[in-house]
Length: 373
Image (cartoon, rainbow, N blue to C red):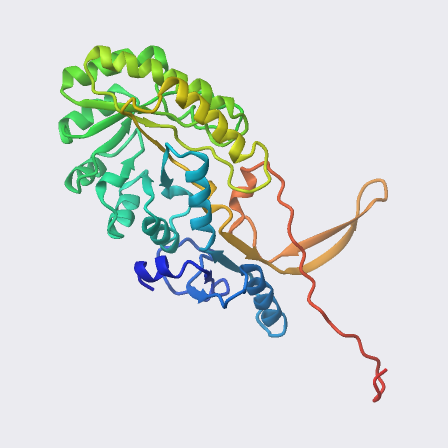
């Protein structure tokens, strides 16, 4: 299906995976169940009804492999919610979160920008016809070959957080528009990123002066409060630090006009902190430190905010057994036909409990007689 068809058909479009192991399409890791076939929903039909229908079909047959349904109709709803809650912030979807071509096509058709972290992600997004102006290469540590690729294709926004990266860019892409990645306190997030990326505020003056001396333009700053941020006030402090960095850059001679507030937004509805609460803190802080009319372009890098609600995985209990634990306690063990080496690898990193929805297929019990009993 073309990008145009996807955009026009968002009144109800699903992706349905083949049973695990049957796909011969390359490019995905072993055990991946990313959907392969498009299904257009009938009027009034829901994605959950499609899931239940597929479960019944498989339960009546010999093949009872797990499968995944991706409800692409979720994406425009999440896009609308993002714009309503953060009207001054342009979403640049974090491709690393889910780079499924269908997800990227729909988001491209909706007009999102894209946060890419590698040449492969740049190739994917540019291949969809997304203009380079809607892409930020948000990896502060890039191979020279990837920098050259970005330069050749006109992707100008690049992040950095070290003098070594500055020198690489000055040598190989002096026309880049650089964004200084700021270290952020993210200890309250599920997945911390500050141990890997970000320059501390006290080191930024030296980096900004080095960029000036190398003849490289720094246009703004970025930060990331960590994936699945648990404290909305983390944004408040980070944005305030960016204000300090902006003033520092302007004094040194850089034209500071770009702010990237990163990601960390919740991906599932009903989780605390709620997205609306987080957006309220961000809006209030932006109004204080980067008021409207200041001439600053503001973007964010939502990933799981868009992608997490899209996919539903259906698995089977293929075996169970009872074990007696010390003290005489009886425990039931259930065995599924998908797990860590398939689509649940993230569970080992994510402390948030996942509660499955149990679907019982209707069955009838009959006696041995020839009558109805």
